[in-house]
Length: 311
Image (cartoon, rainbow, N blue to C red; front, side):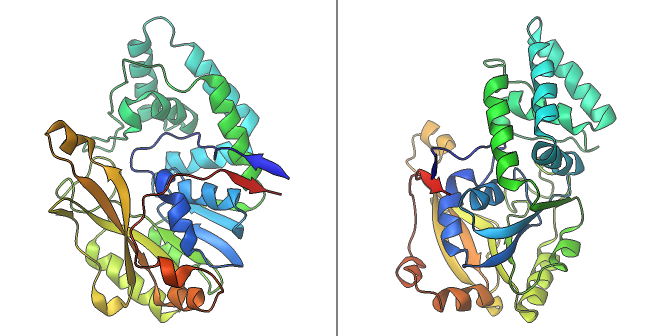
């Protein structure tokens, strides 16, 4: 029996569901054939599910092609990916800001996903930002040099061990991915967060239309596909994004995502909550499985990440 004290995560990504994964995965049914992430980001849910051996296979998709390709390289070529990162990381010990800016310019020119890993590790707060032309433009964190190469290597090897030979990768429109889902799969969706940055959110290369997303959910319901959606949220009295409509017959749960650092700086003690929606097909499956789901489903959560054991 091997003990995993922490789940590996090579990619630093603001907005990742890493800290909420252990709660979200409580709503994953047993015997899932494939866990599908159409908006994978750092693939935090997939990695956490694989650490718990919750699915037979995984499908990681993100419209951000260098990000999706980086995840593929981490899983399929961990030694080469870790060595490339170490080489780029070691080259920064002179003028590290100039080095970062040079790597950023080279990445924007070539879209080499291996360079993207260094930028994600070194940029301010792991916060991805793009300009109107789709070029990565986040600044370097001048207080730190990014993840140490040995730590990065450990994380890369850990993710590869969890996902290699059981994961597919793509960079397609989310609707193409949803069309692949079957009844014994589970789709987890964390689409570009609505309602925060106006019409254009610089954290994403491309947003999604609210009505088009609802139409896609209607089709999933028609096909009786099980899915979970992280979508809207609130902080204090302020809400972010539109609730998903009642006619979809989704079960809505609020997850406590932590105290707002911005509100704390302003002297307000406010907690951020994120909505989690469960599809009718998923709810039906969970209701027929012996578990504590009935006691859990309408509560709010703020739980620490547990240590894991797996065979």
